[in-house]
Image 1 (cartoon, rainbow, N blue to C red):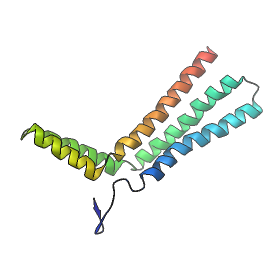
Image 2: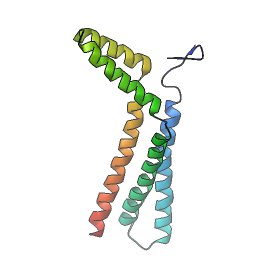
Image 3: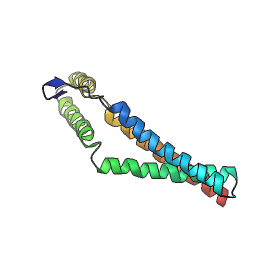
Image 4: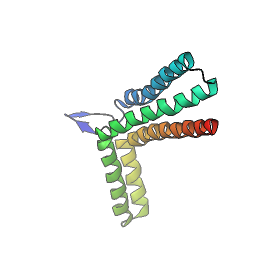
Amino acid sequence: MEHEGKNKSPYSGFWQCCVILLIVPLIIFALIYFAFDRFSGFSNELNIYSSIAIGFGTGFLFQLSCIIAGLFKGMFMVVVHRICTLFSDLRISRKVAIRIYIEDLKENGVVFWGYLLIVLITLGTTIFGIIKLCELLL
């Protein structure tokens, strides 16, 4: 990928964004758990699952706001272009299409899938917390 005359890695800034996307839900979870543990009279288990549901749910909303703000837009367009190219190349030859697809993966990276994995893990953790919380309350 070329930016302003320089070859720029598709992974530049990837780890910093991953840390931010991961640390926000964890910090919110820790703050809420500390507040519940300190000031509520509920059981530790209820405090943990409440904190997971609220903390990771809020973190998921933060990640959605990043998506809406356009953090993943360029990377998503790369994935869409890659898939469109794959299907158009399949008309020529499967072998050529796969080779071009792999070259594109090497050149443009898989950053979008890394970010999407983090968002899905956060969503899954939120759902887990909500389910466990409902089990305790019902």
